[in-house]
Length: 248
Ligand code: 13P
Image (cartoon, rainbow, N blue to C red; front, side):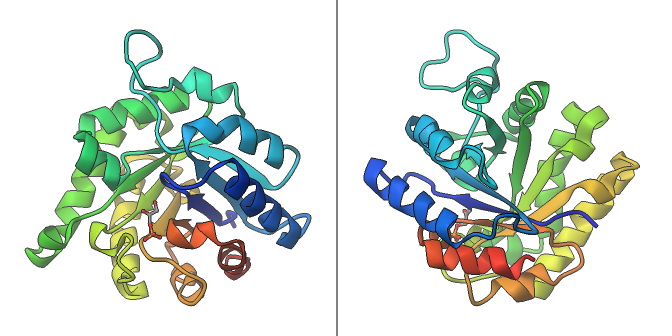
């Protein structure tokens, strides 16, 4: 059975002192060999700091984004090759906040996934519908369209990705998808991957959106939920550790 993956997304939070306390708190509370995989997606300026803090530990480093280009005149962006130099193992791509505030299209997200894969970084491809899309009955169509673009560009190595289903209406709102709602969408994504790859069962499908210490176990018990992408609760060591414990 594949290991679950619990990834914290710090978003644009933290600072040198706060990061130090958070990572040390996590390391102090972790078993030496936790039975799930663990990652933290940190703001780019802190990659080197967190790389040093987590070296040799069970906590893998993730970036919150990656450029769709390999190098060149793209001010402000980080290339996959640069992230690789800091031992970045996973890169979030297509987070709804990137899609919403930075206009990232499905095609751009697919290129970002391609750049990550080319450097041996596992893209965590985020998909999810808005409240309006859910209420108008378009949830499946939206997530399938978002994933289809990534499959189209990366078909040959699609089993190497991680997918995170993050309903936009559940992010930072305290309004979690019910385990049944999440499982329903995860089953759709699994079937879409299965149609594209004989190894679809290897792909980890994470749920994200107000996952916390109280609701994690029930979500993670669903057959197609293979982990979590955790925002707010990943900033508190005791909460993040409880979610990790729920994924054993
Ligand atoms: P919250 O856990 O704060 O809802 O954030 C979810 C998220 O966007 C993780 O990427």
